Length: 524
Image 1 (cartoon, rainbow, N blue to C red):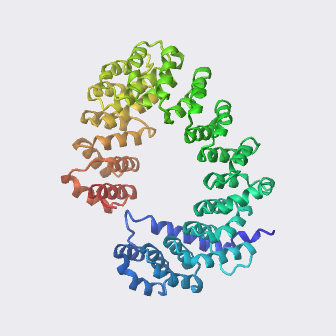
Image 2 (cartoon, rainbow, N blue to C red; image 1 turned 90 degrees about the horizontal axis):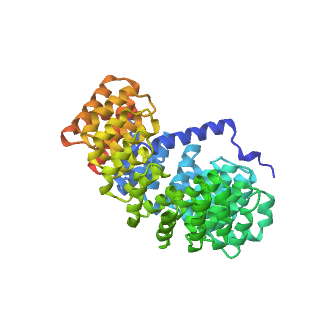
Image 3 (cartoon, rainbow, N blue to C red; image 1 turned 180 degrees about the vertical axis):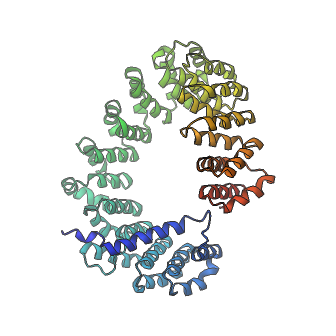
């Protein structure tokens, strides 16, 4: 097959890129409507809802193509199915490509089943090369997926074998959205073709979402093949279909693999959530290095089998070498019975896993351990200080604020970052000035963390900091002020100032002001 017709001609490419940019701009400015009259009109139509329909029916014939596009998009947002024939007519007759594209988007938004034959025909033209006007193939595919009509299954299946990867994945996702079991049956009937054409990734993705008899066996085969991308997709799908037969393979992979592949194996084991995996995972914690043990711990922590906490605590009680992974599981599952032993081992600085032991006390909401955590945070060795700082933030331990403020002077960058986050979580006014001072002294590496913490703390000191930073006009100070503002808790007396920022010439500041005012007004 000659695939050259899948690529845009230069003139067409410009039109499509402009359309996509225009659509993105139009549809993502609901937070702060543009001063452009057409975009403003679009927002007014959205607010009018079905009352705008008579006006929209006139607007789609306007001489200005941008008005026609906006009107079609607004038609889609009305939810009125009686508009489908009108939109279809514009799709067929309007000479402007951007208008046609917006007509497709409107039909997609309306989930217009009446449009399916026409959209299928347009896709078939793309596939055959008999193209009149090139509407982006991906857009047509996504529209059919959103509409969810099984009549589109056959044409979308054909797109699983095209050269263009972006369109191929779009077809895969559309078929999954339609959920027609016939496509999975067809994949299994033609599995040799999928293997020959290197389409096993797409096959695996579909079989995981639309399982039929035989899917599990095919997925298990793909996992053991050399194609890592397809293998990862098969792992995800085996998790989705809760394949117990996959457990031995996944447990082996958890110990041998690394990175993204290992992470997907862990997710699959969590999704399968079988009691059969509990004892083997406990053995992995006991018999492997720290990295693998922690990955096994993350799986156990998220599984629902009731016996996990007891079995992990038994392992923890008998073997201090598993302090870190065991404390992770026990803290995550809030197993209160582990608190005394966690405290005991945290007090002994020679015990391994000090940071995780401390963090777990925070996860366990153990407020009685605040004094101990303050001591650990102040250790000269800093062994466990990071975890203690995190726990104190989780517990919102007001008593720890002076200690955490002192730790802002540490040279340990990782600890410093955690202290900033924890002070923000505690939301104590005493931390505002020290954090502001730090924001002037430190490099850009920590400025956004500090800004978020200040926003959570709020209050008069932080409000003055925002005002001064904005008044300075300095680019970096404006960036910090905008980020602080996003998290700031506005009082009634401060509202006029933030309203004044809506027209600020710095886009980040005006957008942040709009976000915070919208939040307090409880409006979309």
